[in-house]
Length: 195
Image 1: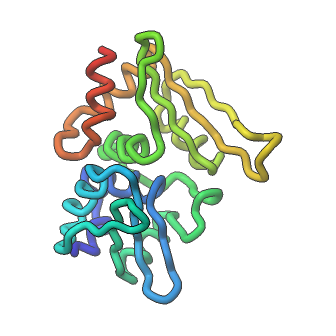
Image 2: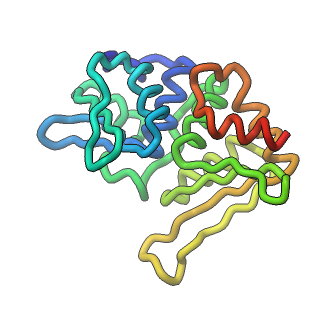
């Protein structure tokens, strides 16, 4: 497979990095690899196509699984700040401005929700790393609600960015430009339906 996808900045590599940061699992013991174990077969198929992985998708514990075994890929991810046990330590990688919208779309497809309660568009991004979501907040630069949940019941709270109404429309309009083939259909269709 293309273990050097993340070596150069393209819209494909930025989108894949957004997925790796949110829903990827980086292992650096034994056989180093990046893996994805998701409910959404469309996401797994898209990632398989981006990395040009020749083998068919397998099922693991009832869900589609993609394993990308490569020391080179893991070292590149670590250089970008995507490390093993990354949930609480992830920081914003140095994504060039030209590819930021593709990266953010990958993040939203991985750890975000697009819905329209009461007919008003809303984009929510969840994460365990306050530093990462703070960086994402400033990168997006739109009005947002930013808060922690589970502060009384969890050792590590989860953090949430919520873009509503006009800010959500602006955010989606930006991230979905030039996104053909690099987006989850169901989230994109929710955006279109809300419009």
